[in-house]
Every structure is written in C-alpha cells, then in structure tokens.
Amino acid sequence: MADDLYGPGQQEIDKLYLRLERDAKQGGYNLNPDVEFVKGLAKGLLVNEMRYGYRACPCRLASDDKIQDKDIICPCNYRDADVAEFGACYCALYVSGAVLKGDKELGSIPERRPPAEERQKPGKASGPELSAAGFMKL
Amino acid sequence: MNFEHVAGKDKGKITLYALSTCIWCKKTKELLAALGVSFDYIYVDLLKGEDRNQAIAEIKRYNPGLSFPTLVIGEKGIVGFREKEIKEALG
Ligand code: SF4
Image (cartoon, rainbow over all chains, first blue to last red; front, top):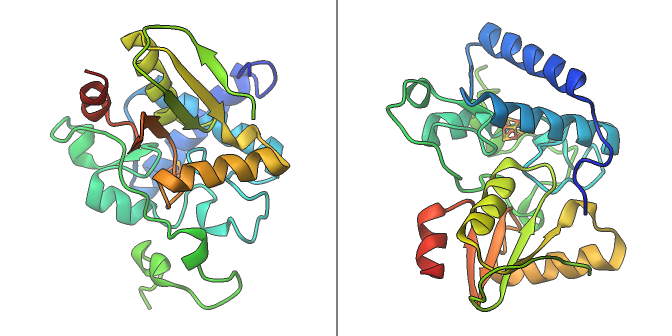
C-alpha cells in the first residue's frame, strides 16, 4: 500500500498550509508549531477532498456521505471543545496557547465524536456537540 | 483483507489499524518500526465493501468508538498514539 503513489503535490500542500496558517491567525487559533505535522494533515485534507469531495477530518474514518460527515468537515464541530479541554484538536492541527508555549505536551486525545449508533440523524436540531463548538451563543 | 507486513523481532501478533491520512497513525507506525518489532498494518480508509466491514468489526472488538490508530498487541487494544503504553506492552 504505497501512500505516495497518487495524491496532491507539494505545491498544493504548501498552499493549503499557508491558507490554514492565515485563517488560524485571523480566527484567533494556533496551528501546531510542528510544520511537518501540519503539512501531513494538509495533505490528508487534500486527499480527502479528492476522494470524497469535502475536507473530511484526516484522523477519522469518513463515510463518503457529506451530510453524515458534516460534523467532521475540517474544522470539525469538536475543535473548540478539544482545544479548550485537551490543548489540541483531535488531529492536533490546532493547539492551545499553552501547548504553543511548550507548557503542555501534545499527544493523542480521546475521541469526542459520538459513535455512529449514538449520533443524531443528520438534519435534526443541533446536538450538544454544536454547543461545545460555541455555536449556541444566542 | 490484505495486511502489509513489516518484518522485525517477533513479539507476538501485533496489528495496527490505521488511516492513510492520519498523522498519529503515521507516528504509531513509525514507533513500531523504530522499536524493530514485526507487525501487520492496514489502512482502513482505503478498504472497500466486505474488507472494510470486516476491518471495522475487528476494530470494534477492541475499540467500540472505532477511532484510529487502534493497535492490537496480543489481545490488548491500545487506542491512539500512546508511546509509553505501547513501549510497555512491548517491553
Ligand atoms: S480534529 Fe482538527 S484536523 Fe480534524 S477536522 Fe477537527 S479541526 Fe480539522
């Protein structure tokens, strides 16, 4: 299973990296300071975009159904809660200020997305994961 | 299912269920390679149809949340890139 036989080129990856960096800054987020790590994830996002037509989270198994995967299109619904609680999003693309300063170490974190059986059917009202992402400030 | 095999020291059956796009999965695979143990791995996102269903069913035995990487060492499942735990399990 060769990973690099097909897929996005370095130029595209670098372009997305710059874009992610710019968007993160503008939105008050921090990218993981490990550039190679972030570029690896940028590549994963581009691969998923080619494969599924949307940028599904590179660290989760996508269903190839955009509506079912709505909560894991990057940036996913779980990013803010994970950065706040664990210092990083699930993939560690985004990190907290403390991680950036080196006050907190990075590692794999638990999966916040509910298992498929417990997930709300798409199209229903927002679940708790949406409030965790800060979309219920009304 | 076609697992890829990485040759190394025999520490029993070690199976890594990974995604080809996930960096923690990559780190886990690199750690196993650096430890020099023999293991099998598979990229579940590249599987289709029955192979994919079978892989998912196997992973769920150890990790009902179906997250990646899921590493199975003997009968022990380790979820996520947990360097210390992996090293201990292989120690
Ligand atoms: S975990 Fe991180 S990389 Fe994955 S979708 Fe969420 S924000 Fe994007």
